[in-house]
Amino acid sequence: MTSVLTILTKSAGRTVSAITNLRVRRMLASSYSFKSLDRPWSTAHLSTLAKIAPIPLRGFTEIYERGGPKYGEHCYQYASSSYPQGLIQPKYIIYPRGDDEVIKAIQYAKKNKLAVAIRTGGHQYSGASSTYGNNIQLDLSNTYDDLRWENTECTLVTVGVSYSLRVFHDKLAAKHRFVPHGQCSHVHLGGHVQTGGYGQLGRSFGLLADHVQKIRIITADGEPKEIQRTSPNDKDLFFAVLGGSPGNFGVVTHVTIAAHRDEDHPLSRGLRIFYPYDRDRLKRLLDVTVRMANDNSFPADYDYCVSVLSGGSVIFPSLSPNIDDTMRTKFPGIFGKDGQFLWPAMIVVYAQWANLGGQGQSYNSAFFDEIKEAGGEHSTFCDEIKQAGGDVLQSLFLGTKVDDDKHHPLSELMGDWIFSNVREFEKPYIKRVFMSNSQTLEKDHWTDNVCDRIHEIQGNDDNGCDLAVQIQHFGGNNSRVYQNNDGSTAISWRDSNICCILDIFYGEKKSALKTARSWQQQNDACVGHPGAIFCTEDRRVLWGSHDLDLDQEHDHYFDNAGAVLPETKYKRLCKIKASVDPDGVFTPNGFCVGAPPVKAADIGAPPDEGADTGDIEMAAQLRGRRKKHETQLEQVA
Image 1 (cartoon, one colour):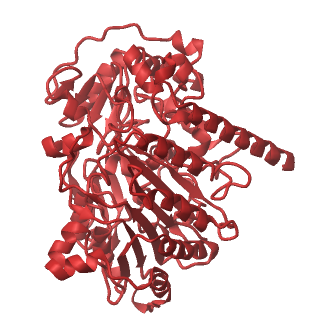
Image 2 (tube, one colour):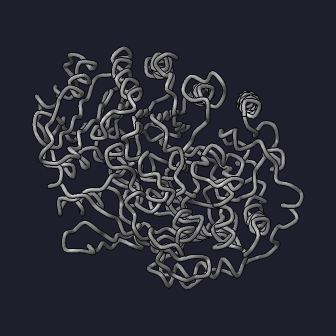
Image 3 (tube, rainbow, N blue to C red):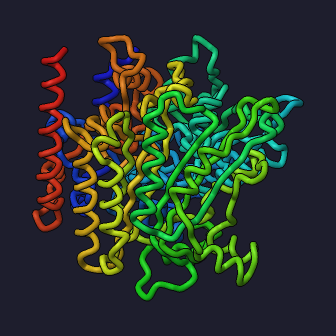
C-alpha cells in the first residue's frame, strides 16, 4: 500500500502548482478566512512542483477553458462572490455526458499530474468543489439524473447524484415516500449526501447518509465500482466517502437509499410560523431549544428549528450589481430560479412530530403549545399578504403557514420545509457553523448572548449587512443522529445537541466587510476554549466549512468517536486516501484529506493585499486558548 507520506508529497505538487501565478497568490492572501493562513507550505512541498505544460484537453461534448467563450458564467458557483476569484478558477470545466467522459478526464489528469474537483450543485461554501491552476473541474449537475426504484414496495431507491434536493424530494413524494435531507432546494445530492445530509428530520430519522445502502463510485484507477454498507471488503471506502470530505476519494455517480413510507406515520404533525423579528421573542423561542437540549430523554418524534432572516427581495434590480446579481439576471439557466421574491426581517419556526410509533401512538400538543406561547401573539406580514391575495400570493412571498391542528404527511412536510431560493442574499458572506454538546447553555446564558449578537446586526438597518441564522436541536439519547452512529461513516460530532449557523452577508458599504469580520470574530470566541459560552470544543461540519485548509483544521471537522487508538479517524481517512488515490488525482485544493497547508507568508502577498491584522491576532489568541485547554486536559488525564 502506498504510504501516507507518499500521498501527501504527491498531493502537494498538484496543489502548490496551482497557486504559482502571482495574481492567484495575492487573491489567496486577501481571503477573510484568516484561520487558513496560519501554516506554511514547506520547502520540501515546493520542491515537488510539477513543471509541465499539459497538452490541451479535447474530445469532450461540453467543455469550457479558462479565457475562452462562456467560461466566466460556467465558472460561477455559490462561493464565487465571497472568496478570491483565483480559488474558483479551474483550467477546464467539463460537463461529462456519462462514465466514459468522466474516466477520460481522470486519465488525462493522472497522465499530466493534475487534479480533479467534483461539483454537483456548486454550493460548497468555501469553494472546495472547484479548483485552480491547470486543474480540472467535473460539473456533474446534469450527468447522472436517473432514478430507479429497487423493490415493489418503493422503500429502496437508486438515484443519480445530479438531482437537486427539490427534484429528488418531488420524485419520492409522488410515491408518498421521504428521506431526511436538507432545506436548500438548489443543493444537489452528490455533495449533500457525502457531508451527511443534515435536515429538519434529524432527530426523528437521522441523516441522509445513514440511509445510504450502496454507493457507485469511479475511483482514480478509472474503474466504476459499487460499494455496500454491509460488505466487509467495502467498509473503508464506504466509511471515507460518507463524511471524509466530498469528492476526495472518487467520483460518486449514484447512491442507493432506504426510503420511509408516509403510511407508517399516519398521525404526523407539523408547524411552521413566520414571526416578525423581535429580539425578546427570539430569546423565548431559543430558550425552548435549550430546555429541549437539557432533557436527554426528550422523545425522538420531535424536531425543532429556529431561523432568523433579514429582510430581502429579489424583485428589484440592484443599482450596482455584483456577480451574484449578474448571474441571476443574465444567466438564470446556470444560476437557478428563485421561488420567494420578498420577505421582511423575520423569525421562522419549523417543528414536526414524526409519529414514530405509528397508528397506536397518540399525539400530545404540549410541545407545540410551548413553542406558540414562546412566540406570543402576532399579526404578521404573512397574515396581511394572505388577506390581500390569498394562499397563492402568500406562497410567492414567504410560503404558507403550517399548523399542527391536523395531520400532515411527512413527505408533504419535507417539501414545505424547503427554501426555494438559490441564495438567501445576493451578496458575499462570511459563514460559520458550530456544533455544541454543552449541558450548561442555560446556566451560561447562551441564549442571551446569541440573541444580543444577532440583534447587533438585525437591529441596525445602516450597517450594510444581512443575516441568515439557523439554530436546531439534534441531540439527546433518543436522537437518531446519535443512535445511528454505528461507525460505518466518518461523520463526526454525533453527540452534539445544538447546531448553530451564523451567516453574515455584507454589501458594498465601505464599513460592511469590517463589520462582518468583527462580528464573526466575536462569534469565534464563543467556542474552542475553557469557558467558551457555546462549546469548549471548536466543532465544525464539512457542509458548512469556512476554511481553506482541511489538514490544518482537521481536528475541528473530525472527532475520534469509535477510533482504535493510536489511529485517529483522520489518520484512518489519510490511509484510505493513500490506498484509493495514491497520485492525489482527487486533491484539487487545500480543503482535502491529507492536502498540504497554506500560509500567506509563503504565498508572497504584499502587505496591502494580505489578511486583516486583527483577523490574524484573533486567530492566534484562539489557538493559544485551545493549546492551553489541551494541556489542561492532558494533565487531568
